[in-house]
Image (tube, rainbow, N blue to C red; front, side, top):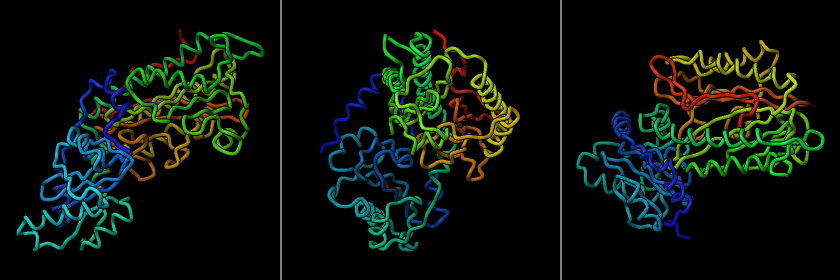
Length: 426
């Protein structure tokens, strides 16, 4: 199977977001880490959407695994044989094409061996190589068989915690597309008509969570971004995601609401509709936006939950400044929800790698990344955060709001307009 043709990538780059240049990575932090730990280099092996590798190389790698080597001040990419042309376009270091059929771990070891042979001083150092904590086991075995001692480093993840101006610009572009996607969902809800039993009809047919999700994703695609399987739409107690479709009583919906969803997933005039997107742009960076709408509320649970979530969001944003603990920002939101009589809930989080009550987390090349509350992290200027308080109820459904912000020396700035509307607007 060839990887040189990438239609999805080409389509994305023709859209509005394609005008934003791919951010570059200054790898000098790895030179410092290598020197301080008396190592001969750094090796990472992965594939697909490996965020650390993409950060280091800006290479849109295939699912096939490949290797990156940082040694002697040189940056070397060992791509699969059928991705060499793409690697030359996207990576600004050296492309190693030798022994393309070998395992990436073997190819990385060969690059390290060549660098050591060319450096007379290398014999004065132990053959120690720095690797990420998640390096594949087989790649580690090949490096060890070549005589290298492996030591773990989190330097790359730490470097990704704060964003450069170019990275912030890339995220801003994706967020603009996210806003257009959510706005498309809002307009559809505003244009919907009432059918039997207060069901919503759009273009003469019942408006289901799945129909709405597809329309939102189509708008994201028109904006030049991928939905990345992250778009979810919740109507009442029914949740539809790109990964699972309509959630059944044995999985996410039961975890969220305690009740099985209606099988049809049709939206009703008096129930909450949550639209949650986390699209990915051509450079790999994500946006994040959640909004909740009710077409015709009677001012009951949905209105109270919306006011509580909005107050929790604003309270959390008010705590954001450099040096603040991520956990404290989340606790401020939780305390505000409690003041309205609502407990902390996941609000439909289906990420397997995250705390179900996580309200605050970083956003970048991964949908969820550092800084995160679980690690005891504090905020730094240049960090990108999603703040997403939510409320759920087994009988009524859920309400969720989110903002994407960048931490500044003075506090924070919103990424995007930050407009909110309880009743959908045309």
